[in-house]
Length: 93
Image 1 (cartoon, rainbow, N blue to C red):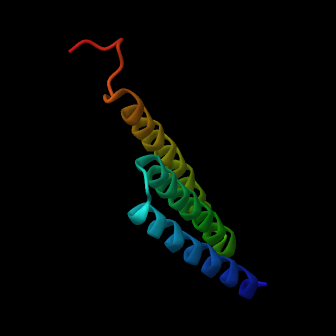
Image 2: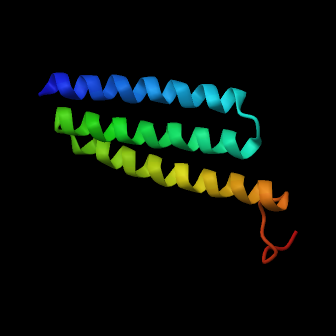
Image 3: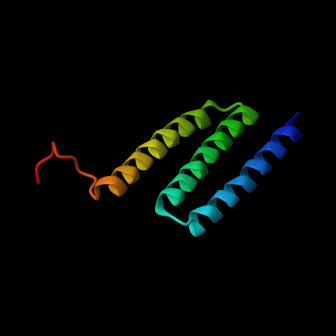
């Protein structure tokens, strides 16, 4: 069974490198942001896979924090692309 997880991990890593290629050669900035977000999601899945294989709950905690940071960074990048600034109108200079 661990051979199956090894193959799954290798496929995920290979797919992540394809997404990194898209991030470097993407035609538009939103394509690049999406590719980096996909790489972050694949990293999260690999962390969960490692947690399952080694039966360590610590990796699940790291994956959860990594997923939250990935989401926040993606939202901030999308907001910056849409409005040209990260700070909202509710904040004063």
